[in-house]
Amino acid sequence: MSPFDQPTTGLGTAETSPNPEGGPKPRPLLWLRAAVLLLVVLNLGYFAWSQGAFAMFGLLPARFAEREPHRVEQQVRPQALKIVAEPPAGSGPGASSPR
Image 1: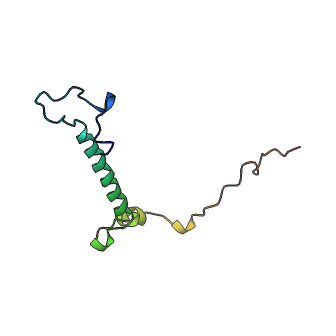
Image 2: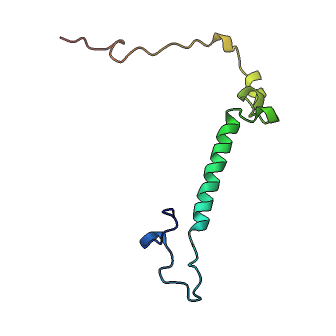
Image 3: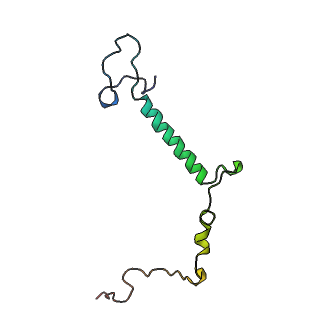
């Protein structure tokens, strides 16, 4: 018997009295568990797709340049862009020297 098969009380159940027909008690929160499980499976599937796990089936996410080629074509002199690292805090102009 798993912990999920045991009767619970409090916020986890919507019905606390036994079934009037004498049959088993309905499980009102079963749909919620199913919905959470479905969302987890869908998230795992999306993650696998975005990492290229379904490449053998021809299902690959588009790269940025393939999704929006007009943005790549609109760049003006991209080779002129120079990326420099930001100096550490306290080593730039106006930084006070320790005494």
